[in-house]
Amino acid sequence: MTTDEKYMLRAIQLAKCGEANTVPNPMVGAVIVRNDCIVGEGYHRKYGGPHAEVNAVRSVRIPGGHTTLCDGQHNIPRETSEYFAECTMYVTLEPCSHWGKTPPCCDMIVEHGFKRVVIGTQDPNAKVNGEGIRRMREAGIEAIDYHRPHVPEITGWTEAEEQELVIKWAEAQACKYPCLHRLYHCPNGGSRHPAEAVHLKKMGVKPGVPDLFLPYPVGDYHGLFIEMKAENGTLRATQRDWLEWLREVGYAAYVCHGAEAAINCIKEYLSHDKT
Ligand SMILES: [Zn+2]
Image (cartoon, rainbow, N blue to C red; front, side, top):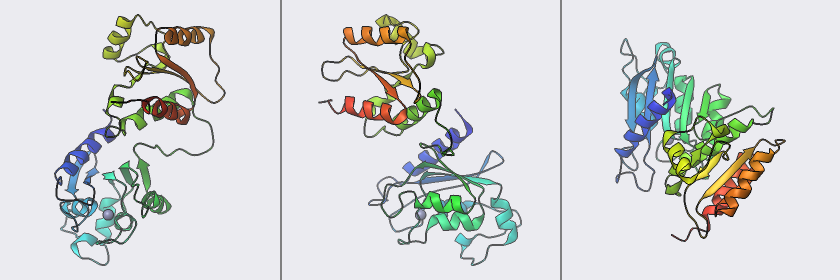
């Protein structure tokens, strides 16, 4: 587990504390980390109340007793912004960028001088929808969308990076497609997760297997295999043989160029699921 994953998991735990009281708002949790130590935590406690980010900032005890904007300050003491400049905020949902019952959290985060913000998922609400992330980035904050890593749009993705994107997408779909927690990643037919290695061995599949494997039957298929290629990547003869064999024994097997194509392929496969 990476450091970011560890703290994001804690933020998710916190979010769940608000269960049943936040409707129609979503549950949201936030963690503030400084020098690999949690210095603040918060969650959205109830509808109409302060957002998770505000509660987290409020919970921080700054040396010297310096206060934050969330304590009703209008100007932030220099010591406060110096303190937060060394902090990362982990928040399960993109900070809001609109005035609701409370002021926009993205502005509050910018004003406190955070250097880094890791976001669990972009807010699909039309009033936010990436605007919170955009405003923080514009202010110089390293704002990371956990499920959609920000990459400079200069070069194409490598095959491994494309696969990583699909896996991250799958992890984010736990509610919509619970079966995706079983999406196995088998890069280069080697270094597989032990569980999937056993499963594949039982099926008689040897190294050289396609990159993604979903052992979930849909319609007449036993499962789905995807061989991923970078945009200009080509299929080796052995891979072609494998795909052919997989189709013969009842699997859906495809070649996808890029993460988007693979994601669409998985969605298409699951759209035939009648369960
Ligand atoms: Zn907010």
